[in-house]
Length: 381
Ligand SMILES: *Cc1c(COP(=O)(O)O)cnc(C)c1O
Image (cartoon, rainbow, N blue to C red; front, side):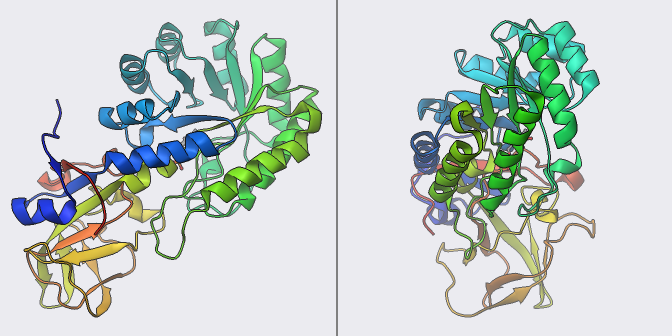
């Protein structure tokens, strides 16, 4: 079922007319299209979309139509969804722990690539996946800083162990490749450099010429005013470092952005339930809703306050403690948020760059979380 029935000019237009009680995610397909083209034309290899970051069908459809031909999937549900929308898309199953029945779904739906970071999971793939024309990418990790969130804490083999796995992948007849994830909202391009250089060392240690190097997701969105994503510069660095590190054995490149593709295509519209006793601001959405990520990823500081008539409140701002609507004390945006001094009950607070890990992780805890969707021509505030 589609929640979207009408296209609005921009978020404030919608808020003024509808005065929504519930939080709203505003989606601008034009922004998603432009971002997809930036990746597809700028990245020096294959662009695949990490479906988990925003698994809505309209996102997958829009990316597919914009020329994104690959999808990073993590579960049978995601596999079937992508397969139904884009049957000829290339699916990469890059959740490195799978049951035999999950693997069977992947095989039946034509998944072309699987990641692995353990010997026992590689045994499973060898037992259940036909090797012909199928790639296995060994996922490795480094102790690298730079991202908002350490992805190596759960998955990734050490450099030494990755070399052993890679040799086994080749010996079993699969297409041998390597992958890593530098960590989400990774604003330091140098992180990719360390990983790419380590990949070359792993391949050399294993005595394997890798077919492809998947440089992960991690590409940042514009969550913070001061930190403007440098995607083109990062793409250029990835191409240059790969050439230097691998020379004649240069593998084809793959990336699998989630946030970097969808983040900036959505803005979250919340409303002010109360400015309690003139100090704390209570919103109708919070950490159990679309703002869940604020616990561990740099919080969004691209925030604007609109009055009930849809006019942006200009003038002075000051730091406020901001709570979500549930009764749980953890339901608070970490730190303080700079908000208009004139903020009042019934105002709207808009958070930009909220396309990733918002719709996907929204819960209905305490009876909240009825997140609406509205399509807009522009996200300009
Ligand atoms: C989550 C994830 C991604 C996407 O990460 P972003 O930081 O959103 O770009 C890509 N690949 C894998 C394996 C992931 O787990």
